[in-house]
Image (cartoon, rainbow, N blue to C red; front, side, top):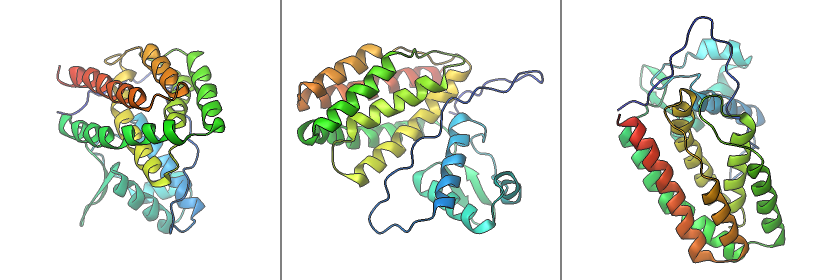
Amino acid sequence: MPAKRPSKSANEPPRQPLLVDPPARSRLDGESEDLLSDRLARQIRLSILRGESPAGSRLNLDEMKGRYDVSLSPLREALSRLTAEGFVRFEAKRGFRVSEMSVANLAEIVTIRRLCEPVAIRESVLRGDDEWEARLAAAAHMLSKRVAGGPGASAEWENAHRKFHLAALSGCGMPMLMHFCSTLMDLQDRYRLQLTQDGAYSRQAGKEHEALLDACVRRDAKLAEKLALAHIDETYRHLMAVMKV
């Protein structure tokens, strides 16, 4: 079942971006450097997350070349990367399209996230150094100063929320696992962000974040793993309740 789309009026003012541009991810071993295609992939990914490029819509390469002021080669490279990540799909003779949103797709994303993220949080708690702990505490502090909301949720909260969860995983010492976890977060956040825009989805998870921080700081790997899973599951439960209405 497709996710709900917010209605728009002709006089509606431009929507405040729900996400700021996330930091570039660490390059994996064997990857070549292509800063232009990296930037393009990040911009297009954000457009998809925000719903500016609707699910199922065709991506017109000529239009995108003009919009981003780039040649075809880096644009194709960026779209191929997003295809591998699951944000875009390629159809022979029909080109690139934004991936559909559905109950089945969300369930698959969450199933894979439940396999990857507990490993990353457990290894972070066991292996993270003082810098990791300080980074996590700082991210938690910034998140606590911002309030999640329904319509008009601030870009600042979204950015702080993402940084907190990535900081919690960042002590695992496994760049490939971090890349997978970050991609899965984005894929799930696509649903949460677009359902939040029209007020269909809204929940406060501040207590869950506090409990996860406390378990990490106390170096309780088993509890941190349990809390990370519970957080994923609770968000999933709320999203599914909205999508099935």
